[in-house]
Length: 113
Length: 111
Image 1 (spheres, rainbow over the protein chains, first blue to last red):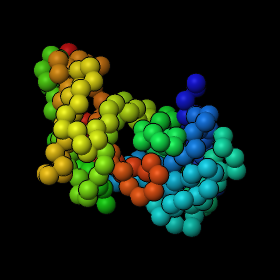
Image 2 (cartoon, chains in turn red, blue):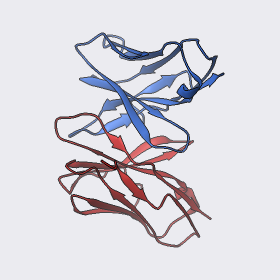
Image 3 (cartoon, each protein chain N blue to C red):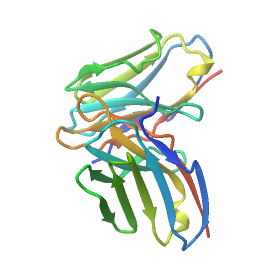
């Protein structure tokens, strides 16, 4: 199994631009999570999907952030418009029912100039 | 706010020494997990301990859980330079397998 796959690995953009981060969870996993990691705030849970349905999006910072999971093998996290304070590493993680352990992707390093 | 808080924030030791990291949490839990993150990489699950367990071993890792004190410790014995990484505790939160992560301990093992 290839594990959780995220793209792009690095993204540099200018303030005001739209950014789309992509994630392919491990096949057969039914839970998907988006986390954001910064030095100041550590690892923050942004949104949790179960069976492609958003269950908890209380961590999404504001309306500029949106996430979708159109099917079991793909999710996107979109920031529009992006701001410099959105600069962080964004991780996608997946898990399966009955197993508490999460599997993380390698992350997308986002820099908003 | 974070559920788990690790202590110390940073730890530097020599190869061969033992490394101990602590995690405190605030609410009742039914399990606690430890993860490792190498620089520039995603987190990797190390070990899970359930609330009815006091101690668990996996190779050179030993995890303890004290539910009365709401604390856990991760001990890495006979450390190696390759153990250099950040270590995070994680506790369940809300529905499904949602997790809240602590701030992490940055471990440096000098060869």
